[in-house]
Image (cartoon, rainbow, N blue to C red; front, top):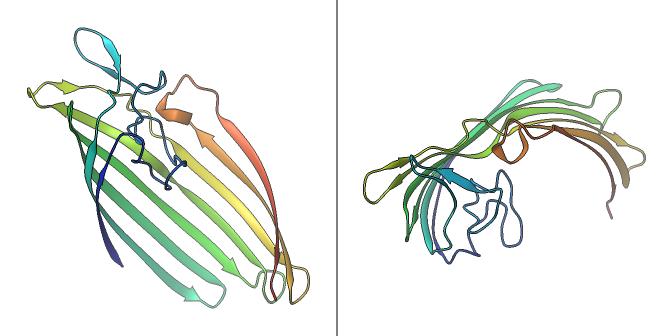
Length: 185
């Protein structure tokens, strides 16, 4: 499957994940004025400016079922963004997922996902000066197991491990436990 999305937004409207959400680093979400969203030039370190943004996002995803009990999926995305007051930015994300349907019993699902959340890879100013950004990718590693308790109730414990949160290698890794209960009627 291939996807395209074109967006024109004011600074508060550009986010991976939708309004009020931010998947990936502050840098990748081009959040203006945030202390954690810093660009480095030869002269100084500066925050991303607050400005309107236009972007073109491209994505590809594929999934292949090797058997009824083993599926491999993956995706990659690229966003070319233009900050009206600064220049052009390149943002990348990608992942691979392994899933094991019906593991243990019918309706259960084990899933393992590893990939890179949206990460700003570079900025070119309108004057042609490249601004460097942290080359640390925000790695997202996740595992979950959906246990089908009854026909109408499933419990899904999981764990998410974020490496280089906010695209800064000096940041401590984050480990998040999750527990979801799904009621189907």
